[in-house]
Image (cartoon, rainbow, N blue to C red; front, top):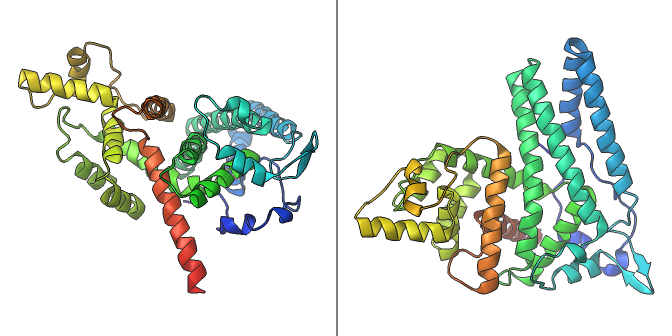
Length: 356
């Protein structure tokens, strides 16, 4: 099901010439896409009949969200030419600035609109999460409830993809051309708080998360786990192609282990060593804390906030390993999958251009 309304374009069309930088297109934050607006209208119609007071509260909340977006839009656009203290700044100079590698938190190097817009997206996520519960509580069709759940998941993955883009921009194994495209995609995300790549990736990553919740991998061995994950998903040819073409990469397989087990690379190595020393081939989730000698959260809920929290733990661990150049995955599974999607899209653009 379609969550966002985008017409696919070649990013190179926007990157032809700095001289063409202009104000000919909208620089507003997308408060509601056409699809999201249709969902909200359905919920409003339902609440108007069964709970007018709830409708009033929700209408106030959405109005507050729109005012927040309007206030953020007052800050300088990232797509317009500016002259600050005699220095000309455009999206192109911002792209080149983003490509400069910096260790540590880059927050103070980012535009104000970028940092403020992230807060807007968090507000929008919470608003849609609330609307999902209202849709369920007030008896909307299951298809509509599922649509709200899907729209909410897209918002969460849009939050996540901002981090992924920042990681990939620093990935020197990728071509400079693709990294420039990622930087431009990041600027568009900051400008509008919407992203066309998330439309491709979000349903897959959500399905992977759901599959992971239903798996019971044998801790201490990875035999058959990747195949079981592939069979469990049964829904996306891009994911299948990713698994088949990238799982042989050591960093990808280690990132996959972290994702599946819900443990850090270091914890996995300690657990394997302990089980090998004790002559035990595998244990269940509920025994992990005992063998590692520390409390490990092993219950996997359907709450997408848990997905995001566990992602940030893996992200932070990967960044530390990369900075210190130590053993273990230097990227998350999400990084690797988005890199695969972006490279595939770039190849498709290239083939389409040369087929004309």
